[in-house]
Image 1 (cartoon, rainbow, N blue to C red):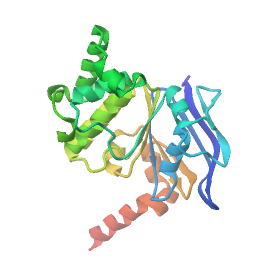
Image 2 (image 1 turned 180 degrees about the vertical axis):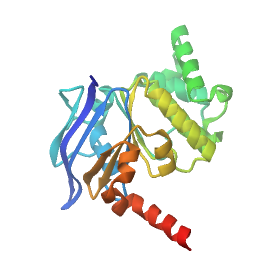
Image 3 (image 1 turned 30 degrees about the horizontal axis):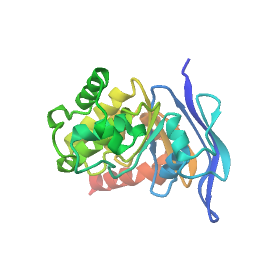
Image 4 (image 1 turned 45 degrees about the horizontal axis):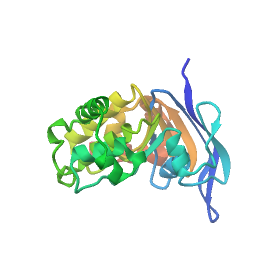
Length: 257
C-alpha cells in the first residue's frame, strides 16, 4: 500500500477578497514525482507557498506523514520537518566554488562562516562527492558557482537542498530557461531523486511533463480540475478547453491550412 507523506485538505487562500486557491485537495505519496500544471493564475505556486509555510490558508489543513499538522507552522519549522522549497531563480553563492556551496548547505545549521571553517569528516566528504556526481558537477567542483550555466546553477541548488535531507522537494518551474539537453538531464535527475524523496513540480513546459510525469494534477482558477496520468489528463475535455486545448487548436489549424 502506498504511504501518504503529504495531505492537503480543502485549502483556500484569500488575498483581500481574491481567492487564489479554492478548496484544493492534494495527496502525495512517498517516492512520487507529481507535476502540478495549469494556466497562469491557476494557483499552482500559491499551493507550494502554502505547503512550505510562506502563505497561510484562510481555511483547510496541511498534514505531514499522516498526522503532523503543519498548516500554521512557520517556514523554518516546516523546513526542519523535511520540506525543501526551490524557487524559479537559483539561490546560490555565486562568488564561492561549487564545492563550497555544497559544503555550506551540508552544515547550514552552523552558520555560513562556521560552516566554512569546520573540517569535513571523511563520511561527510564522501557524501558531498556523491552529491556532486548525482547533479553532474563533479568536474566543476572548483568552479565559481557564478560561472556555471543556468541549468548547472539549478542542479547545484537542487544538490544543496538534498544535502539537507528533505523528505519532500517543492520545485517551481525548474527547467525554465534551460537548453533541451539541460531539460532532459533535469528530468533524469528528478527520476533519480524520487527513489529516496517525494517531489512536487510546478511546470509549464508540457513536453517536459509528458516525458517525465507519472501523475499530473491540473489546477484552474484555484481549484482541482483533473488528476491522473498524463494520458488521462490529455483526454479530458475540460482540460483541453482551459489549457491543453489551446495547443490542440493551434495544431489543428496548421494541419488544415
